[in-house]
Length: 191
Image 1: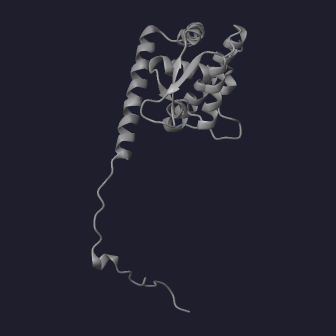
Image 2: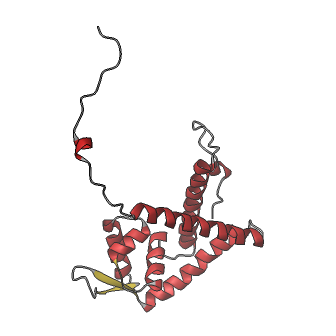
Image 3: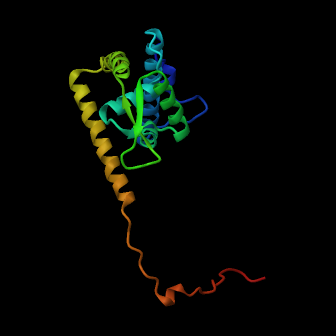
């Protein structure tokens, strides 16, 4: 498996070095996400598990919440509905998942992990878990707990932010006098 190079942790030479946390942290999170995906994909390849991270994530989601429709899986996987459809068809063809009619939505299918899929998921989960263990081994146990706590707080902060965005504020009626447009007065020199 390839090592994550130090070069990836730095900004490209043409870009100014970000110094504010709101610039640096998103960059680091993106790089970590990319490195983990590469490591998992590479480990699956080496261990001859014919599965991508996207397939792995779908199986994990369906194991945790059996019966999810494809649209919800696409949202959770940050992919388009078309991409998720391709992933689901492949997993179904391989015998890892099965389709059943959705109980409330006639046009949607519910998806479930099969026994074969559970076996492949168990094997993939061990490989994925080992990657996380190796990554976290760079930290002391207290740092791991601190990192977990900080990430949980960030998630709660985003939940609060998203809930604030979703709040619908009542529309204030516009008074008649404010609704009339006034001609703007020109300030400056006349020619």
